[in-house]
Image (cartoon, rainbow, N blue to C red; front, side):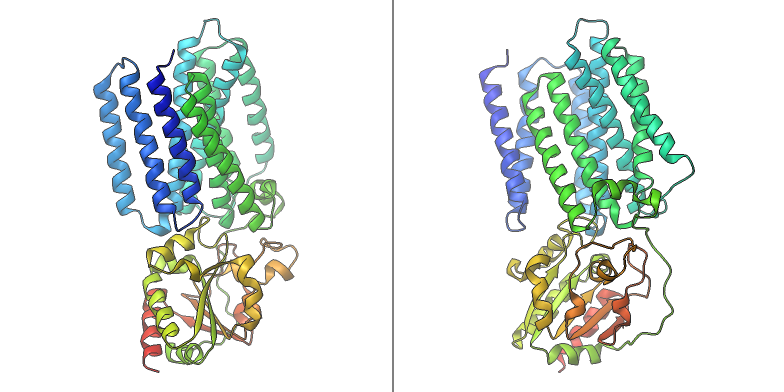
Length: 458
């Protein structure tokens, strides 16, 4: 029987997790929500040391110290542009840990009289946790460019994936009927294979959606592990992560204008976003910072469209200063935020919040799309696919059907780009060749500084 004080502590921790999710739903309260969630996790961890007589305490403390050190170093050294990779690793570690705990539990209960549902939950935790672990490692490798970002397919991949999936189900049934450690290890190996085969065909801008899906998988494995261990807090926390990850996956897929199934298996029929393509040699109109400064300085309404290139160049502080200078001149300026700009949901919100951009200036796609027709200049900084008209005009394009920002409706368009290389979807953006479009080439941070100085000199 769990002591009352432990149940109360777990209830407080569970409430902390719920409040953390609530706080993370808005940039205004995200920092506070993160701290509340961390406090709940700390409370849940400390309670374990006083709840039961633990063995191997020095090893446990050493593991906690090692993990804490890795977390602190990661938080300090990982740049904003690398945050999706870090999230992918966190997902993988969570799923892998849940699978290992389930394997240890299976070793303990093998040969005992155990309820079939408990064994089914254990098998589920092993296989889905393994899928999350290996799949997350592949997404990390793709985002970190340790392997190609393009879909990886080969003849027979669907057959191999289907066979591995069916074999996992069959072996799970065997684990329920005749539980053994060896069957559990075999199930984990099959799960690892399924995870790799699941993510290999995913390319380009679809990878963040898969990260969110794997996050949901990890949450489900933690919830199932909580059931197996009889730990209510794990059950609650895993359910929260699984539910929120599932909702986020569906919302991201909707923002991309595609189904989750098409995201995962679209490459098998040519429908996935394909990753980096080749630079176009078609003629475009370009200008220097002084010319663009004149466009901005004499506008009445300006919209900024930030993208991944802004994050890579770490130009958000210079951009905010430019917006402040324009605001002092009486020019109305806001930021138009696409739901999947960057490499993960909220990427641009967090990046701009880091530069102390007022939250009121950040406008979501649905709220700002009707304003482009009244906009004198739209300044696109490092974004590409989220303003690509091919999403509306070119059936068969990898991003066709994806809702985009209506930057093409503005009176003048300024594209800040390093080169003519396509966006993550690997296709040309016809907006670059529009007569209203002016390109400002160069590193976003350096070019933004020059543009800022030119505006100040007007």
